[in-house]
Image (cartoon, rainbow over all chains, first blue to last red; front, side):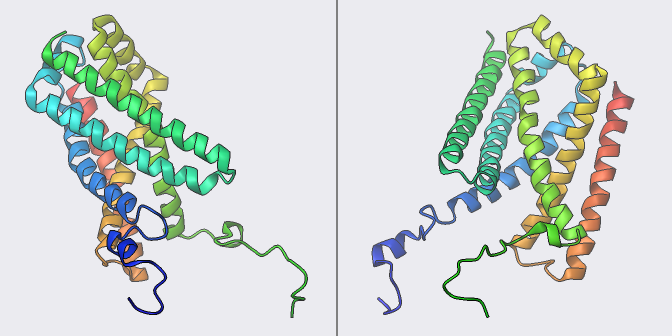
Length: 129
Length: 132
């Protein structure tokens, strides 16, 4: 271990740095950015080419396996990306530690709940409810 | 020289008020603003899917709102936000690879992003109007 290194070899191997989670947040933001790009192109294309916006036509479209799977992937990718982005905004603009923690927890619970609701809805339509 | 015994309020970076807005900085804050708007806009995705799973009546409430004047204005705003955030997001991903950092290229890519936003938004609404 070099003399000027304060961190232990174990901490260095884990690579989490002083922010405690290293580049994980940054990296996942990029991963979901790339998946969002493809999935949103699909979603926009689907919105444009939707046969009609009647309930029957929409659910028929959503129940097709390829659409149901892509919609669930889009929900996971979008809400993950939104939660990561919202976290940065809250961390930048809320300087009261208690309020910041409350906002962070509330925001994460909201996106987790919304994502589960969306996935359940897709499954119910796709698997027939 | 300042008196080391006196604690002064130091200016905080980035201290936005003293800078003249530049295209690069305005586009940067717009990326965050559109991202925030889109995070709020996910509520439409939740509404659409839950309404579809609930039944025909609930889904009609959703589509009626989308067709209303307020719904159309909101959807237009979200479409601009989506295409801007998408285009500028690609610019950010390219920056991550180390390219386009020269000021001239950063500006050029910025104009491409603004152009793509206008073209994609225009094409999207043109298609929506033509097909429906």
